[in-house]
Image 1: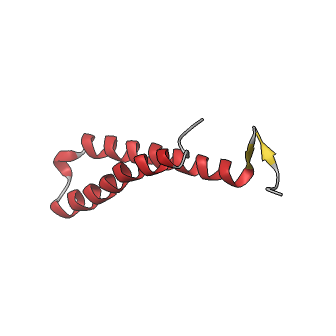
Image 2: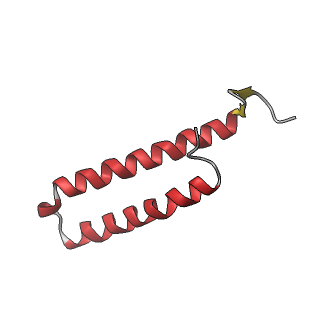
Length: 71
């Protein structure tokens, strides 16, 4: 038994899909904000943002492979 199913998917899987979508939206918002304020960012800020955005770029194909970004 899988448990409760909504829209043909188990509820935990739907939660994971929502979290994956939220992570992608947050990464896009972070990249957009960083681009708008790029002149104000110090070296440490750029390094941190680079690591976060590199992780987001690596996350997207991983999540797509597992079907987390599929409707």
